[in-house]
Amino acid sequence: MRELFLAMLIGKLRNTPTWMGQLKDESSFVGNNVIHLNAIGADPTVLINNSVYPIATAQREDTDIPLALNKYDTTNTRISQDELYAIPYDKPGSVIEQHKGVLDEQMGAHGLYTIAPQAATAAMPILVTTGANDGTGRLRMTPEDLIRLSNAFDNAKIPKQGRILVLSNEHVMDLQISTLGSYIAAMFQNIGTGTLAPTLYGFQLHQDLYAPVYNLTTKTRKAFGAATAGTDSTGSVAFYAPDAFRALGTAQMFYRAADLDPETRSSVAGFQVYGVCAPYTRRSQAAIISGKV
Image 1 (cartoon, helix red, strand yellow):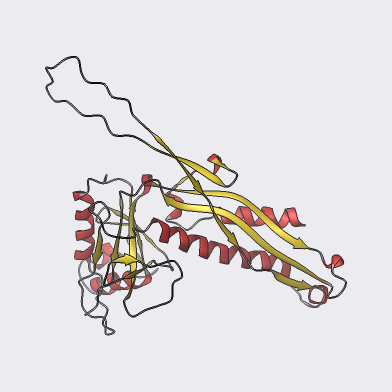
Image 2 (cartoon, rainbow, N blue to C red):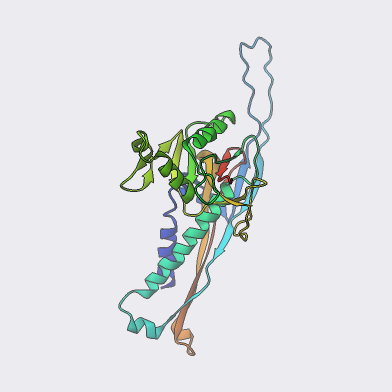
């Protein structure tokens, strides 16, 4: 039964969030829950109308970067034999779904947090929304803010193809409201489904229920799961898909059958999964966070 449950869990974990599905799956290169990344050396120089020979030759120096996968554990769930006789549904299967659900949530949220830039640089801008006050002191995201984000990517010479934008719930709502009733509303959103256009200003759009949190004063990303503060601001994350990856390592089910627990006549199950979602390099990620009045 343990092998069956574990196979069910692994199969379901491969159904990643839509934005994560745009990343290259490097799981086949994982060994002992460590993946080795290669940071390539400097680009060659392009000579235009060269007349000087011999042409210079340089050795490209690549760097091996070992990266340990994150370990995700679920707390255990107990299922008594009495329950199994009394209920009319597959509780063990329901438990698997529940563990899979929380693993999906936390691995996805942690992955997006990892990709999001920690602090602003020329190659990793962190912009602030400039829209109207939403009534709580938060400034809404506007289409103009997305144009500024696109321009920042252009200035950083990030290729046009492969730009991904993962919008927070607040920013999706802002864009829907900002175009509501306008002549361009049909291009921005599907009112029937409540979704935005699949692409906007060069970004492939996705939405995630979990958004990284930034300190608005310092424009720095807060620690994952940190306590809330008055300076908090949620952010939407943009990145160049070829510069990020995902990988799944080993998965294990910890299980004790009821016949090994004579005191409570219950089975106990929990899971441990190794995985990572991260950028290959810090050069093409950005965030746009909500401003405040």
